[in-house]
Length: 327
Image 1 (tube, rainbow, N blue to C red):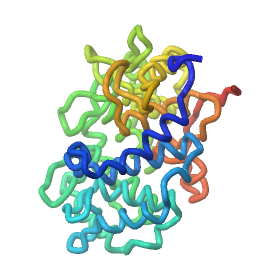
Image 2: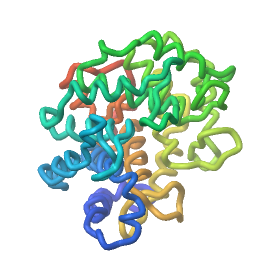
Image 3: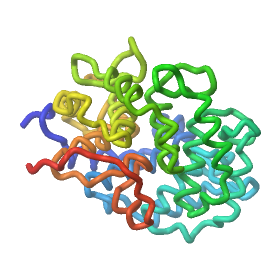
Image 4: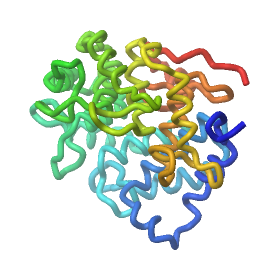
C-alpha cells in the first residue's frame, strides 16, 4: 500500500515522540506559546492510534503542573506564561485522559474560568480581554470535564452563541463575523454539551458544511478557500453531532487526508507537499476515526477526546461515526 491509501501509524508515533526531544531547536522555543496545546494534540492523536503509552505519563503530568499560574488559578501554555483558557482546557483534557485530575485545585480553576465570562455572555481568553466563541467552547468543555457545569450561567452563554448565528446556518467568531467551519464546530459542540442543539438550524447548517468539500476530496473552512486537513475534523465533527456524516464523500476525504502524510518522517500536513505539524496530525487522525478508518480508536467529536474517556465520565452526547471498517 502507498501512503495515499494507508495510515502510517508507526511513523506518526515516532514523529510525535520526537517533538519534545530537540529542545535546542529554534522551532521548539518559537512554539512555546503552544506547548501545552501541542501536548494535548500529540497525546490525543496517540490515543486514537491506540498508542497512548508512547509518551511517559509522569513526565507529561509533571510538565502540565509546571504550567500552573498560581496567581490566576489557571494554566499557561508553558512554565512562567500567563494563564489562558486555551491552555487551561488542554491541561484539563490531558489530566482527564491520564486519570490525574486530582492533581489540581478544581475550585480555583473553576473560579478562573468563570471570571472570564463577559456581560454579553461570551468568554475572554485571559485577563487581557480578547473574546471569541472558541473561548466559550473552552469554558463549557472544561467546566463539563470538571463536573462543574452547574456553576455556569447557561442562558447567558447560549444567548451569545445564538447571536453569532448567520443566515447560512453557520456561526462566526463574534457577532457579525462570517461563518467559519472552526467556529461552527466550537458553537455546535458547546451547544451539544449544554443540551441546546435546538438553537441550530440542522438542515441549513449541514448543507453549508457539506458544501465545504472540494473536488479533490478535501474540506475548506469558508467558501473560496483552499482545502486544509484540519477542516476534516472541524466539518466532520459538526456533521457528526448533527447526524449528517453521510452528506460528504467519505472515501475522497479519507484519500485526501492520507495523501497529506509525510511517508518518510511521519506526521500530517495541512495539504500534500507541505510541512507536517502535530496540530494537523491530530485533526487528520481524528477525522479518519470518525470516518471509520480501520484499527483506530473511537473519538468523541464533542470533546475531541477518546470516546471511552468521555463515556467513563458519563458525559457522552449524541453523535455518530461511520462504522469501523476491518483491515
